[in-house]
Image 1 (tube, rainbow over the protein chains, first blue to last red):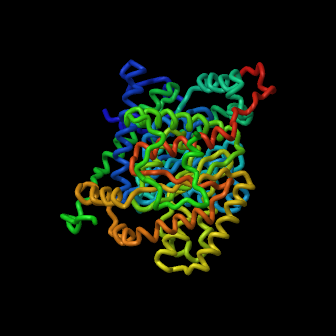
Image 2 (cartoon, rainbow over the protein chains, first blue to last red):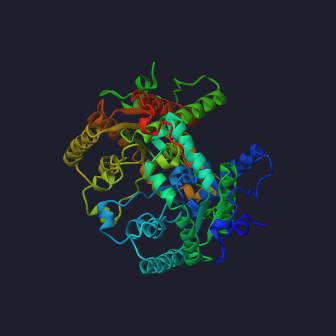
Image 3 (cartoon, chains in turn red, blue):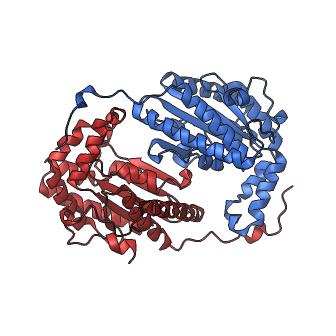
Length: 268
Length: 268
């Protein structure tokens, strides 16, 4: 089974029922899995060179997940063998005053990939239907309207040449406790600990419900959601690298054709 | 001798007299030099994590050089072990209509690094005193005024917390011929060949003169130029990685202090 099929969300996916610890792609040997991920990452790098050469396709990768779910680690583990020239990593933090004065898709639209490039959103417009709804900054009617905006926006991007893949990094509540505790116990990691994370943790169940409803509302063949069991960092990277590579391979990228005008030309 | 001292341009540097083939940092063994560069790149990655953690310093790296001088290769070889989250690679191409309607520093200013980040300019505002002057789109008076603007701009960046280092990748005219010829001879590399490069090659000497005058006009201790012999790709990466690492080490970065409020905290 392809990784795409393995992890693709369905309209019925209940996030809280997905086992965050499962490792369907694992060889059973952690070292081997790491080597396999390195090989995939390197192959993604080769595919990206052709994407860049062709100056035609655009790939948008969306990473979502609770705090500590491993979005930064994914960026580092999966997209680190790509020529940095052809990839753009965009982290969306709390919106600035100017950003807030615009519609919520304004800052997102500015960062979508250009032809020949891969862009990774570390958090995204989905924060505007997750965080906002959990905190009751928007009501359910506004949330539904936003799902519709997002569907429209993503369809427009797809129809104008952007390949979109969306990952939910799914960890268990216990695993989040372990990861937060690590940041507390190691003084050199204290700077990574944001007290806000504890507050968000209070809303764990609400987030799981919202992930499910956001996926149901916005999953589409042109903008598929993949739910990645992410308690194991090694397997998470393996899984995401596999889906990314399969997605690129499906584009059937090739180096641009030779230029006949150059045949036999000698530089002096 | 430090790499910074080895390659630092002086007011008297005549680019055309610098031997593009020299390899002062080489061990004499290419494989060893590559391993050494990997080790430096990995150390740069660790430094960058502290830069990111501190959210204070900003590093701006400017790469300039003729076509085929290895700017893309430098990005790939020196900055590829950094968490992509903390580095931004900006390639400046021919300005768009909107960019042209602004002053030439407008699009540059938008891309300078934020606190905690490294930004690499692959080409930069120096194109606006090099290409423009070679083609006589600006006269010598305008060129002098722009040197002054650039000095002012870079001093402002430095005084507001940006560490700036500028590299001229210096290759010989023969080496450029070899590299262009490679792109012609290999059909799969034809897409990398831009006929414009041949036209620019006609102005080789003019570019060498202008590099020298731009360096003379804009070299400063807060925005130093390094002239990197770049006929050898391996040694070029070794040299640039060495200067970048020395620059970061001089910032004496440390992980932020432990947070006493977290001592003994248990996540439930």
